[in-house]
Length: 242
Figure 1 (spheres, helix red, strand yellow):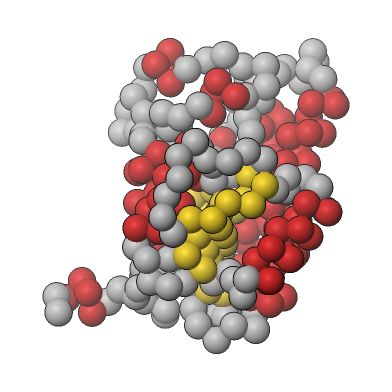
Figure 2 (figure 1 turned 180 degrees about the horizontal axis):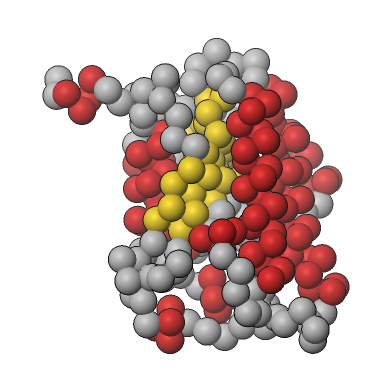
């Protein structure tokens, strides 16, 4: 056994829930965890484009209470209460505050804030009863720490998520480890799917992370010894200024 192996823990056979896991960062995380032996459930509004052994899919809209309740029943009925939650579901938006559409802003907060809260509220009580090391990881953004033009609503939603993560950490430690990962620019369909924004990572000119880079960070956090909690990690392209 190497020194590294002595100081890591396995996620083999643990149950992991990944919200927003059908594409981009979420799917890379789901595949990484399945490859490490975890039993993975993807919760998303659409199914992954490709099947992967060790991954189940449940159609879920985390902005709707009834849909999250159905996800809970789906997992509970299969004896799959999560040891790990990767709370990843989210969407971008680029609008000026003097010109944007508040109805769209409400949609963003329903997904980027309330979606995480609904998921945690549903699964947390039973997670607290489990005896093994448990983890909740929020996928946030460097935008949580930096205001920028056209990004007020998105950045505010991610700043709120950071407050939620830190509050949860204080409420559940040491039985559950709570972490947040703040990625910079990542080469996914995020910008393409954002509301009111057509900017691409190429146009930013900083280079970009791959979704697998974020997945690697997730696996690193999860495999630390049970006595070690990495509560926040920022990962960005080396040329990105913020």
